[in-house]
Length: 141
Ligand code: ZNH
Image (cartoon, rainbow, N blue to C red; front, side, top):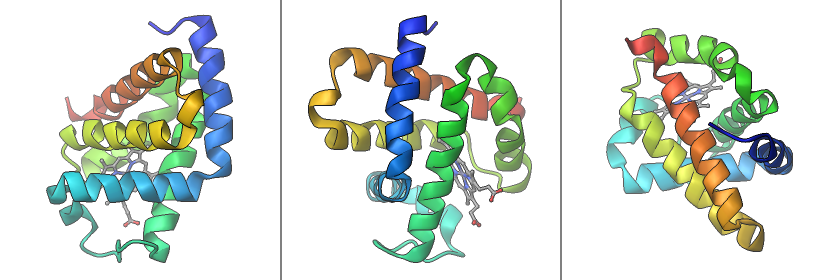
C-alpha cells in the first residue's frame, strides 16, 4: 500500500517530528479536544488544559509510539499490538477516536511542516495514519 519511497519519506518525517514530540503531541491533542469535545471524557482524571504537564507528557508518549511504528511500517500490526490491546481492554477507548486523533495529527503536521508538507508527503502521511488507526482498532474485533 505504501511504496518504498513513501516509507523512506515517512521515516525522515517522523525522525524530525520526534525532536518536537511534546509540542506536536500536545497541539494534536488540543485540536482533538476542541474539535471533538467528547474525546475529553477519557481524560477526566488528568489536567489537559493548554500547556499542562499531563497534556505535554501524554502528547509526547503518543507521538513517540507513532515514531517507533514508523521505523518499520511493514511490522506495524506487531509493533502496535500491545497498544491496541491496552486501548481496547483497559482504557476502553472507542475505536472511532483513533481516526479523530490521527486527523488532528495530520492537521498539526500540515501547519508545522509548512512547505515540506507537499502533496506527496500529505498522501504518505494520510495513508500511514489511516493504517495506524486501523491497526490500533484491531483488538476490538
Ligand atoms: Zn492513547 C495512553 C498511544 C489514541 C486515550 N496512548 C496511551 C499511551 C500511549 C498511547 C503510548 C501510554 C501507554 C502507557 O503509558 O503504557 N493513543 C496512542 C496512539 C494513539 C492513541 C499512538 C493514536 C494515534 N488514546 C488515543 C485516543 C484516545 C486515547 C484517540 C482517546 C480519545 N491513551 C488514552 C488514555 C490513556 C492513553 C486515556 C491513558 C492516559 C493516562 O495516563 O492515564
